[in-house]
Image 1: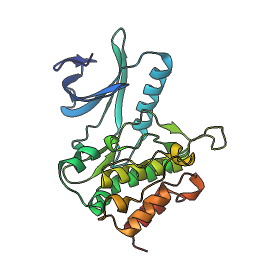
Image 2: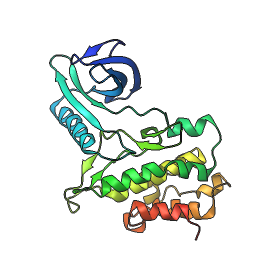
Image 3: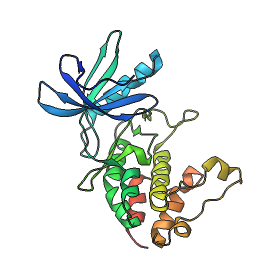
Length: 248
């Protein structure tokens, strides 16, 4: 059950309203009564030690961030018999999905607005060890009123400690997810499923065939970043950004 408005937690945080409800967690707009500032407060909705540890890791990741396009966690606590929570900076805005649905946006406007997400991914991929988001999608990107984008929800994030480990997920998977997100936002439909493409059951339609306003260089960049084989994608997010923003 979501927390009721006016609930006070940890003798410090007042819940104002539910902001986002997911299957694993809820995010509230809250107020820090000690510092007199609005904050975002996330609640773990899944029981079990594994989920509790992952929730704590998410808070730890966010507490180390020093980047303008990423949230930063400032507190983590457990209330026995009630729940597990962490507090982070509140980002005012709408999801990228809501932003593109509310009014017509050109492909170049979408890409320009997402510059902050590219910067955020460059930052977390440059950490030692690199951090992989693993859940880049239109609902995990916030666009502010002044068109600055933020990457949120690090609930599935993992440190890339060993790239040779079986099933290791590297930064190129974030590149694929970001390309799929852009494809979705400019065509209003997701790209063909990568597994079905690998099996030969589906093919990737160029974004330009679904939206003729997509420039040729953007279409080509999305096609490469959406390559089934990771080695066929761009070497990193920065090179992908350059391909999207510079005509050949």
